[in-house]
Length: 284
Ligand code: PMP
Image (cartoon, rainbow, N blue to C red; front, side, top):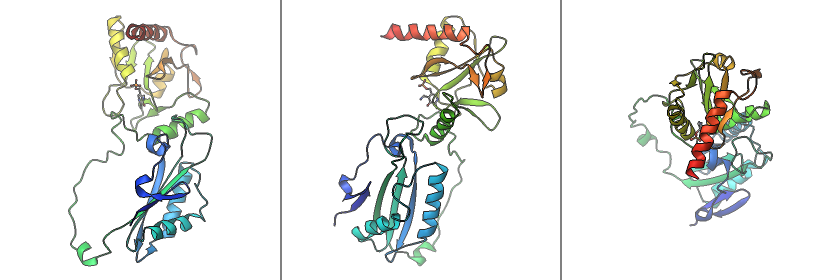
């Protein structure tokens, strides 16, 4: 029997079920899902799953891909077309297809996919045998050193920046220290002229631009200190800037509405931008 998947309004053979490469689920993990048990042909706790889905969508400002009232119709179709008596229904809603950009797209065409498959039927005796567990540190998500596509928090914060009329958002950790931007590394030049960037451990992505700039600063005799700084320190700094492959070395002139230095690109930042421009020209 051919498995059938539902993809954005169509029931298609499972093998041919595809989503666009710029679907934000694929690009950013910008989506939500539910898994619902099918027991003797019935969707178990369906209403609770719909309530949680509504909540998840609402929290992320993702539009219903079809009306909430239509969802059970499609869910039943997917179960029926796959002839699942005991099994699972999987559904996923993402923010849809848009050119890759962290901030939300203008449209609200969210994507919806559903699959269903049979599983072993509910076996109380087998379940009652019990299982082992192990304990692990909760690393959800404390591994920012990995350039993972799991970028949902980055998208949410970038969107917040855009809505506040800002270019970027800089994250603050539980100790009140700036980690990095949603898509860049954060730097300041303190009042005493000290060039600072946070140490590249698991709390930040070790930007390639950051690494190159550190080398260039060393080569040019600019002293550099690797340490974290607070938002207050950044606001009181002489200069601030951010680095990334797409932003290069970009001066930051205001933080939370407060001018940094004289509110213009700082002189050391401009020098570093010059070094970086020459570094790129040298490779061109
Ligand atoms: N931090 C984060 C979270 C990023 O997404 C990026 C850029 N994608 C950076 C830092 C900067 O890295 P790079 O200089 O390699 O672009």
